[in-house]
Length: 433
Image (cartoon, rainbow, N blue to C red; front, side):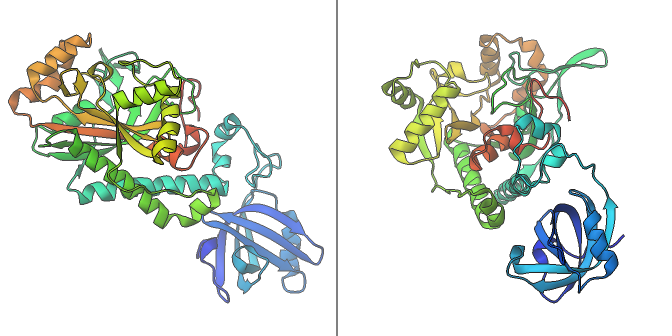
């Protein structure tokens, strides 16, 4: 097999190259034949004038089908009409793999496909240059997140994905049989990363994987999701945690803007990188703004999807902000481990264009207060003995957050559905592929 020497975006006039990829399109103008060859980095035009290529290659160009995998060896020439202003005159073409003529969807995107058809045939859907661009941007998000946190003295960890109890209780749990015991897929690394605060490793993060039995079939809910999860010790209050989060998000947006210009251009996206600190909107103010806009919301309620979206529009119109913190929630709306002042939680959400992408705050580090809060939430203290044990032997004040990668990329790229930014999404109805 011919060995690829470069991708389609790195060919140069006058060079001999070997390209490898898929037949995107084929055209025949009689005395000259064209193939558009698609690889990970773009599309190259393979041009075969009858008078300049061998008879064997000229005939072979006729037989190649769409989405066949081929390698092409040839010479690069300047051509103003070709993609990137360059074309390849082939001296050798090798067929690696053929595709059936009836394709499940159209990678050239001339024919639209609904989201279910796309996900059922994800291997074909990701061949589309715009879909490939989404996942190259996703990769940059993860790289930027890791680089920023490492620069801030965080240590990367990995925690178990099987847990003896739920992080937040409730019904959003996937139970499983763990030998003779019942266990659960981890809702988040929350309890484990808090345990790490008792070890002296006082700044940790994880590229985490969540499992939540979401009953909702909405455009923003999944059964499996990814997040950047952090925990940090010796904080004064939740503001210290918010400072890390807003600078992390700002750094991610800057890196995507600087390093993925081609992909953003292909998607028609311009990213606004807001200055830090991000706007803080207190819960009481948010409720008042929604009520003034005619929404039937009441103090003490958590904000639902429609209220969240409406608030995003109000904040955008009033202040011009896409990213903003919601703070000073009623304690009743937050998990048992959230610290508090009276009936106000030391917690926050970070919203992006009307959708929550992160939640966090300062945690309780007093073991007796923790026990009380677990009971108040209607949970059995006995189920949390392993979690509570470190709190009895010296636990510093700490806090953290989880930043949802799937929601971040959905909002950043204005995707219609969160599933578009996930390779193989699973939800209430979808388990395969």
